[in-house]
Amino acid sequence: MNWSTRIPTEADCTELRGLIDAQESNLDPNHKPASESWPIELLRGHNDSPRNLVWVDDSGTIHAWASMQPDEHRHRVEIEFFRAPGFPKLREVWDWCLVTGKEDFTGWTLWPTSNFRDEEIATIFRETGFSLLRKYHIVTRPLQEMEYPALPDGAAVELISSDDDFVEWHAAHQDAFSQHFGFTPRPADKWIPHFKEYDGADPNGRFLLRVDGVVAGFVSCTNDNEHENGGFVDVLGVRHEYQGKGYGELLLRWAFAYCAGRGFTDVDLTVDTGNESGALALYERVGFRTLSEFHLYART
Image 1 (spheres, helix red, strand yellow):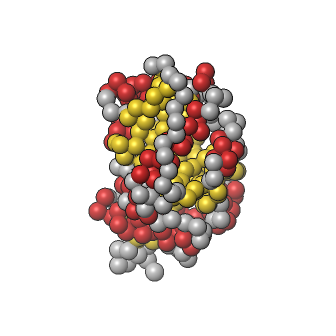
Image 2 (cartoon, one colour):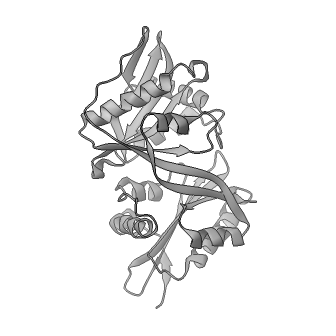
Image 3 (cartoon, rainbow, N blue to C red):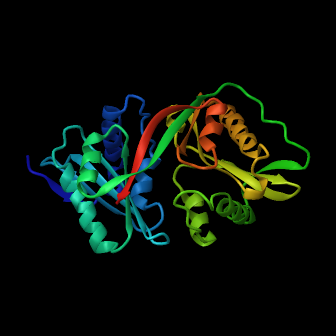
């Protein structure tokens, strides 16, 4: 079979979504079908102009896809791969990423990720000087009808809607995540558009927690699992001076009630298992269980 490459467009999104599912379901029986927003977001770029390339056969069918997501602010490139089971040119796909990284992003850090069961790509990473850097779990929790949690005196939860709300959300986020792995401060004019324009965003699912009028924390739900009648908690955080007071769990339970109110049967989120804040312990305490896992690699 002859192979050729081309740059994919949004007209390919249905086929690319199928490619994601073909790979992930082959690797992991717990894989949930990909959302429509997944390929769209990779083609449009998380932060800056992405590099995307697909490998096609003589009929034009896509068999593999590499997506490189540069972040000029952090001088870092996040990389994802998808291919049909049995695709024979995976090393060629990775070599394209390495060459593109060297030529277009000289001196930047390359961060490829893969399903934890994908030993083929893990071997290729190791053979080219990359090693496991971080493990992330996708966790899930069933939902049933539930009430919003009672708020302590002086506390209020408000929908994020105005421009001023987004500015306050950005400031609280930068504080809450300032000590997390891989964090680099990002200016509001770069950070806010990402959350406003994300294809899977749920404008009704973003909340600020105020304590005596001051933003103490936040939680944001997205539509990433809506196609599976499920909720997804995209980001949750509490400013440092308010941590240890139970506000993280309060916000999490607020998200549960919101997702249950939409009729969802479960809710998922992604957690860094090495997070020193103890987030994984919190999620386990409120009923989450591990659904799947993916690994982040970096050059040693």
